[in-house]
Length: 209
View 1 (cartoon, rainbow, N blue to C red):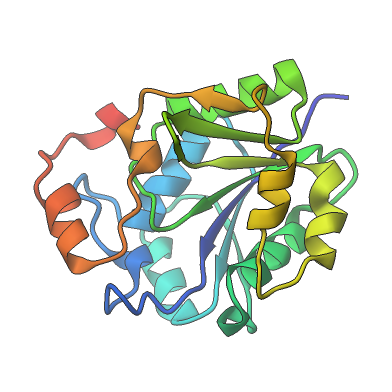
View 2: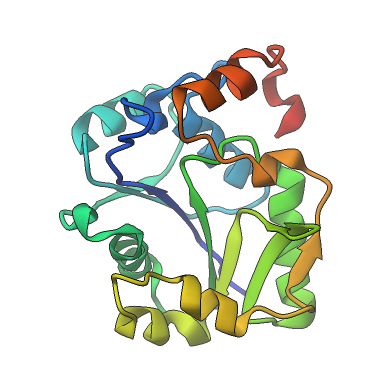
């Protein structure tokens, strides 16, 4: 059976440091942050994309609908409990027979390329490492790929600590993939970071996807 690897986009937080919903911010190429990420996954061959929303769920869903892109939305009513609660909501939506792993990314990281997504998936299919992630020196980027064997551990994890202890415990040299894609490591949390990265970029359309 061919591997089925859906993608989960975590977009449920309050975006308190930005002061407005990051999912609906223009990404500089005609897309919002969220639409660009979904478009990137689709371009990479991922045909099941889950968007987990919480704070301002309805405005985010309405904004995304204008893109015409296919994605399934899941509402995490417990989003204030932390990012792990959103990841678990996403896992609940994608976990079915045939699913071997999940790609996970943040709505804060809109500039990753489709080539990077494909490289992460290809590395997983080649190595079957339980955690696969882009790396650049000491940096770890997105998307993160989590093997199905870790789903139960995530569900049992302490929500206060989140997924990081599980990711770190199962990371490996085989799963850390050197990637030359600055977008995989560009996490946009504040208005200043938005100005420096998105607003300063030329309108490059799909060229960087």
